[in-house]
Image (cartoon, rainbow, N blue to C red; front, side, top):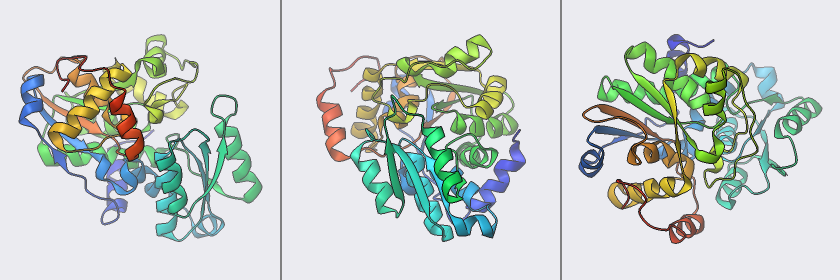
Length: 327
């Protein structure tokens, strides 16, 4: 459905627009894990997360008549901000459907980028239905958070940049929500490094992709209760699952406590602020969920959109170290 050429086309479209985010290393992290670890810090992307890549690739590809009418999206926060920024950059407007319990920092940022926000109850209402109805009513183009080839291709530039910079990797760890980031990253990583293992990471309570891969079909679960608000999908995307069931080598699960350990390590040792979803891939590494000894490992730090008050509250509620990588 998408290939390396689609990711390369996205990279060309994003050149000079998206940030080429830094790759960070830590001797402490290498010592703890016994691996050579490279952190792709998407918390430094425009909008604070990888989502800008896919949103801009999609919106910048729209024909002028569609741009004149505007775009719509539904999102728990990071895609919302990405669509708002991308819409502003190409000179159009955006309406975003967001859960009413979205962290305040993400709501404020989305409005601050110029988007109109419509809220809903994520536990009782269907965001896709609300977004589709809004788009039809107003003549807007719907920009999905992951169910679109252009969005997936844009997200794949995370992995292509990482491998371009550090060379071949043995393992790539990527957080999984709806599956767009890992679908794009797996597509390009497998093409650039045929022997690479691509492992997805989900919260324990949000294991819809793990269950779906085991069942060989998409499995819907109750809306996850987890601090990782960016990973609260209840079913994998239809398009993303077609890619991921073919390319993924496995899915690791992490607890909220392990995610907090990863956030703490990033803050204390790397001086990086990551939101819970952004730290989940590192959490799997620190908790020993993946065999990485003496291997070169890429890890996506997918976003840093956590407000000061919530970060302090999360750290205050942390019970203490829970694994070998805890600090």
